[in-house]
Length: 401
Image (cartoon, rainbow, N blue to C red; front, side, top):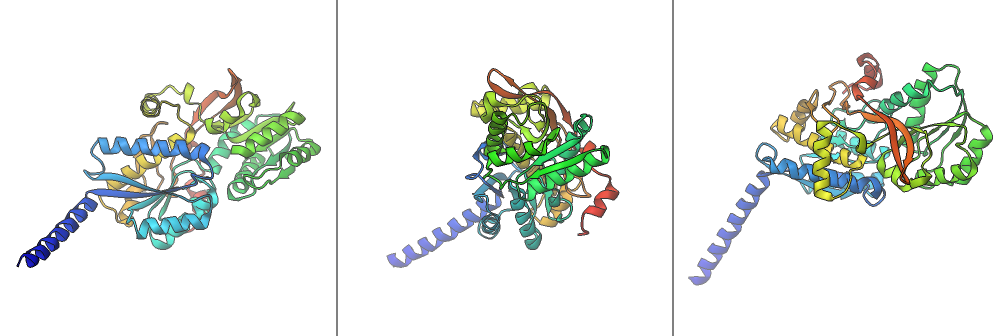
């Protein structure tokens, strides 16, 4: 009799545990997050801190419609196949409501393709290729950061006023670099038909051999250079370029170089006067940014990088979409996200219905050195909405869902 009671009690305990587990699952919403943490820590570690701060703030204010937000994070190691495997595990094993993140453009496209095939909502955080929202866009994919087209348009606004006519380009030879060069050349040539493109250099991403690259560009004798390298490649290029005098007497326009994560390693080697997009956190004086900066510094005792902004706003945006949808159904998430406006440390942004691109903007300014450290000066914020093509143009660029 005692044995029988024991088994009944054990069965009841298991049943109760299962019910409690199910109730716990219903009391939280999971987001699956994927990024290249081991490959690009300079950007992704601040990015992780940004989204962790967002999760903390969201849950402290009641979660998402009363449910706790949980982020399940995976490292893709910079490999598209690993990113798709991670996405599959997050959806099938973890039961996430949506996917978010990614850094490299080719990985963003791989996860976007997975999302489209599996009908899973995906909020791309960082990948910048225009293909994410245009030529390879799909109904399940949205993007936060300003695209290559948007950043190129911002840079061309300043670059087209330079007297230089002979231009060379240096960019990593993969989706992001190819996309950035193509759109910059297109927009620049439209504004300045007198431009000549005299040289292109395509070093492999993360493996630049800076000496031959600098030598080849110098031999082409351009009056101006477009640079799209970043991270360790940028440091090698700048060091070799400074040593060989490549930048002396030449204008340089550079994607992303004004971001602290890429300026900081350059220190006093930072070239003066490059026209760049970036994040001058020390000179932004708005209530929205002040609140973010105060919260970030209080939690981490460190200053934010651009990655911090991207991570923070990705999860804030995901939470706003989930809250508006009142559901984890992908179709309802899409309906909620299309046209959604919300605040950010850079001011209000909107996820456009026509192409799922957010109107988050970027800062454009010039590089300089202060106290042995690279900084951005003469910077101004460019609203993303002001640098996007018309709806009619987008309809030509984006396939029908």
